[in-house]
Image (cartoon, rainbow, N blue to C red; front, side):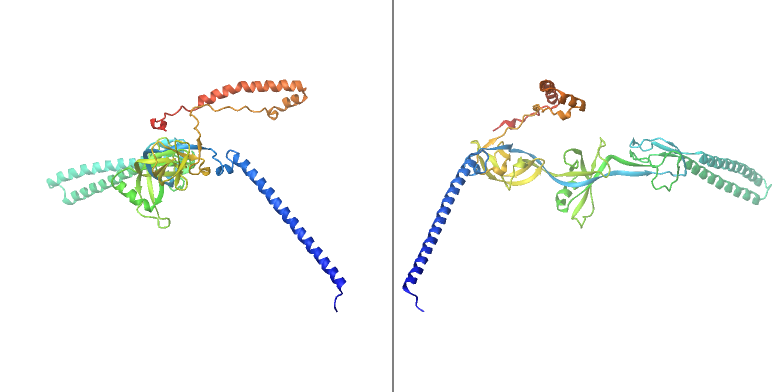
Length: 471
């Protein structure tokens, strides 16, 4: 059905109004978005400028020439030890369990637990009376048989004189000679029994078989001890000298075996668990005869004099084995190395990125191969915020021996006794202020004394080498 012309004009007019409204709305939205973006950019630019002007700010790393405070160390030429680290344990040179060799009651103890004893020192005594009686019996039998032997020998001599005179038969002489030989055997057996009895009696004196340190007592006076006791009476461990046993990778054998073959000492140092205190110094004494296939390592034994007695058997130690010494090598502080490079401080206060080839490390010094002048300064702290050419401010280290600054401590009423706190709460404001002022004056008077005590206990300044003052 055809649409009438007036109705058609109304539809076209309505559609035109809707199109213009939509376009107007879109235009307004576009203008709002553009204005908001411009405002955001202006605000972000201002914030970035403010951040860039702050010292140490994040924007200062790229936008401005901010000066970075750093600590530095010196480049030196010195001898550097090539050492390998290992974990080991201490082993006694010898261990002996003191046991009784005869059965009996302990009547005397002559040692104190933990003491150092020499070989042959009397430690204990067993009741000797039964062994003395046994020795007396054997001695009596020996005396009797020696008398019989002497009488038989005299008879044999008389019989031989009579035989020369043809007064007795030869058979009687032969019988007497056999009796003499029989008694000689009896006397020999008696003498052996006497020696055995004397030995058993000597075993009642228990002495130290080796020199060393005594352990804890395992038997008390009045106990009956026997040779079969598992724990014995006491244990002695020889700890002067003492040995350390540790393992190193088998790849180090080509550096170790030639020095052992040439009788060149291989120094070894022992450190505590936290690597803060050195416990002792010694040399390698033996090398195991086989490599552990499970770990690919070989066991090494080192000897230590242990003169101060600080090392104990089964003690855990950190081991530093010295394999070689690099003569007159270039070294830098170990903390200066970062990802294969160091920052060299130049005369104009900027840093230069310098690639280095790291070598062995000994303590806080690291051997490097690089084009670094001796006496130059390299950055050791503050590396993560540096770039090549950045400006730095070198922080001078604190001078040794300077007394620490004593900070004022704020008065804390909770530290007062309960009765004083109760009185303080009952005071008027004027009384409370007077009380607090007196407390502060007393604390201020004590601070100079504390500072003087701290300065007196501070270590003396170490001597500075001549090379330390070079720029």
